[in-house]
Length: 174
Image 1: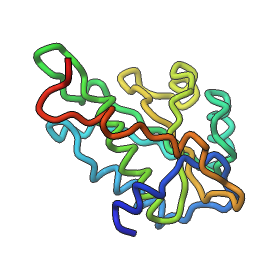
Image 2 (image 1 turned 180 degrees about the vertical axis):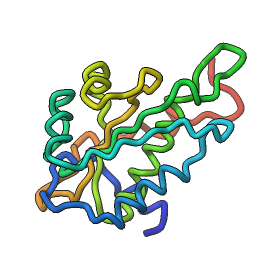
Image 3 (image 1 turned 90 degrees about the horizontal axis):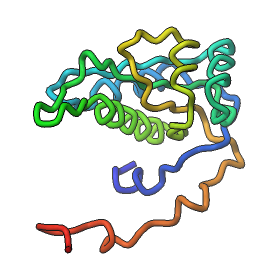
Image 4 (image 1 turned 60 degrees about the vertical axis):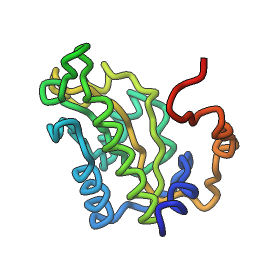
């Protein structure tokens, strides 16, 4: 699939088939995350593959948004490894983790798999359930699997602002 088609066709899957994800496909998705650019190439992303029943049960204690996926990827960043902008102390870890998650989501779609970005989770419970080190911050959860036969795009998927409301040239108005 070419990129323009992939970016247009990909949607947040909210209903998954029970079919397991093949290791070869999972490996390609993880490699896409490893290939992602990060600030100063510090590579602060830390990826937890949640793939067994016990792990998915722990995950359901942290969020109700697993959508019946057979597995999930928890994208974290290590605050001690992230680049920090010297002007204001902003830590790039969340941006880096977001780039990593996006590349993995696009790779999954290219392989015929579905994901949805879940940010609605309890980070304290997540850290406790999965024994995250204190310097790890969970940034995104990606339920992962094959879309169910009756999975559909959320109606909001089709609602896009006109480009004139979000794209500006040379300066912002006003």
